[in-house]
Image (cartoon, rainbow, N blue to C red; front, side, top):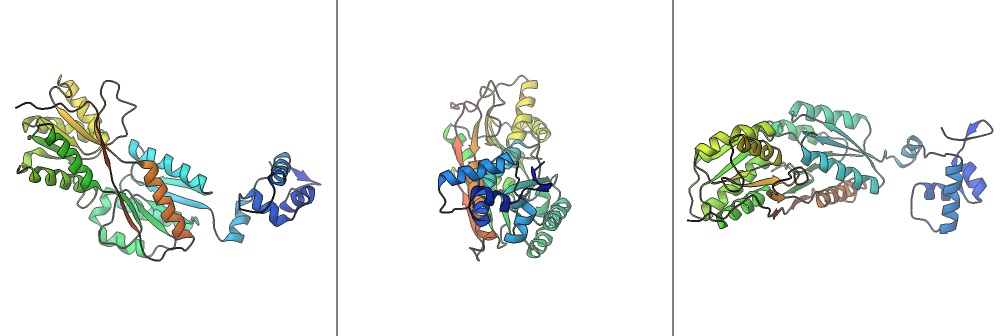
Length: 345
């Protein structure tokens, strides 16, 4: 509990009186605002505040600044290691910039997307980082109407909304799918399968498009039985093993790490070895610390950079520095591990 002077809670005025400076100067120091006050005086103010266990009243601060210094994050699946890592990095980035991050999980549901957007708005957040559900790609018109009614700034993160003018910070997933497939081709593989999420115009569809680009560039006509749909979860990858093996593929691009985990489990049950019996390229690079006997070759996405750019766009929007929507597409990088072997003719 905050300390009390004479039966009442300590205030900025009390700290200012004890420190011998103005209340405005104390407020600047305690809120980490730039000010022309000596380091010695800053140290003294913080010592007085700590001694009396003073806590900045965020409600009062919000009334003065017209900001809550709180932002929301809508995630599609917190159990997915990619999104949990992204949430951690975004929280750290926001904290460094003086903002508190709250997150909520939509379970990849469009209905939940809409409800969570409304709930964050009603709680007075200054902005919302929005990773849309895969289901929302079936309701693009409805989603665009909902976003047009937003009363607070928002930034679309990771999963783009093509053809809709709003702030985006995402990775170029078509390029990532192309990089992964091209690498397998360079290793001599021509019978290459792809396990992907059929999400219409989302990341899964774009990774598949990159896979198709690379095959056609090398004069290979894609085969329908080598394009296997999954659900971006472990079970989806596990279920894909049998159709991939039946297709005669010697290599596979599995379009997210959770499905790769299920795919590896299915291969292990069948006594298949990676890369001896099957070469694999994954996507996300979120399993590196969990796999002990294999280092997956995978398409990596720099989450620190993603969070940094998303936060920059958000703060620019909150502070009213931008009018036009920003669409930023970051470049993924292929990280080579030991899950792909060179195929000999």
